[in-house]
Length: 230
Image (cartoon, rainbow, N blue to C red):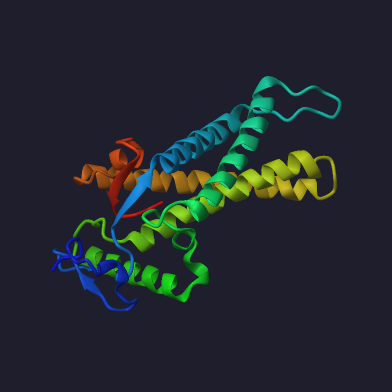
């Protein structure tokens, strides 16, 4: 029986590998078919737009000197950052409130659960096995996909929080120079993550998957997806 038709798949114990129809071990506890509600998708889009605006727009921003009024690119960067911080806070709260068919917070941040870490390690091992056999990655690694998505959310959270804390709390103080360095470092890490994440998604789409359309297409209140990521 394949994992898609096994009614008990979602309750398999960690460590008991389940074979897909490609005979590749996949996550034993995390079912690959999930729902993403319209709220989740809207928050995803808002976070993506905020990320792109902040990363690209930062190249055109100049901090005003003491006593100078900020120009509009700087003000837009500041308040878009604040909006991004509010959005990511809403997203984290939404992960605690949304239905059981969507990705729970512990799957996005699996490091504090032995079962979640086990599922993640199983996915990494399964993916390595598939790559060593020179086969393209499948979509059967929901624990890994969720952890990677959670990593991006964590980077964005730190980037937005450090920027807001510098502007509202530490600007002009002795700690401010360290906070702004960390903020810029987080932005560089976010660039690397975004480029890598987008590249993998495009390659996956080119290989025949429809991950890009599934992530952003709105088809009613909720859309089913294979290969859970957020």
